[in-house]
Image (tube, one colour):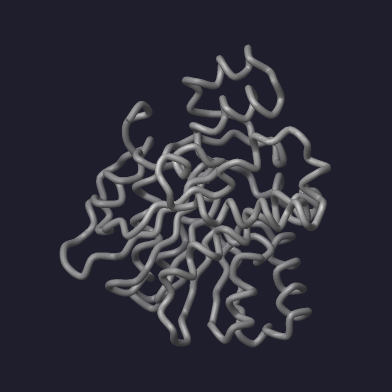
Length: 278
């Protein structure tokens, strides 16, 4: 991993604060709504790689699924344990303190029906290596959900929400940044960059979504805290999440891919995931 776990340990409180904001809650609700369109109606085994304090999967455990969280931050996993216990699902949540490279040694081949990889790839050393690692414990025809900050959103966010046109101009071609919350370097991607490495790792894309298509371009953050306003915003975000061209401009992109039942991954190195200018 590029990032150091200490940065995540030290910023747990700030991360929890962010999760409770309207835009944080919107991130989780839209991602889950998109994922729900593809989950099979049965008890599933779900792996969340880089799952932090567990907000993506503890709700799934509450619905009867069995989930495993892998994260290299001890503080995040301790909070995940508390969240699971508070929700009464500790018996369906398994925690592993490890980094991405340890995945093949932690789990047998094909033991999970779904793998979540949310907000991980921007911290990973290489996209293709990440995809090969998370593919190993996923069963044939299993689902992978990828989520990452969308590079296309950076310039729009500075121009429309912050009215900072020089910064927006700088961001047009930027492919790296420093994460606001954790203060560590991150890569910026667009969804089209992930398509070649996904194919090379043995996946076929099922669907592409945008998460927070308009929220991050609205300057009045206080208004977003109004329950009625937030409800209408969430309704609009759900409607836009899979509609062209809105999903291309969202703050995050989410890709749902299926592990192919034939073929084998290409394990060749690819550090960037594809062209930066698709």
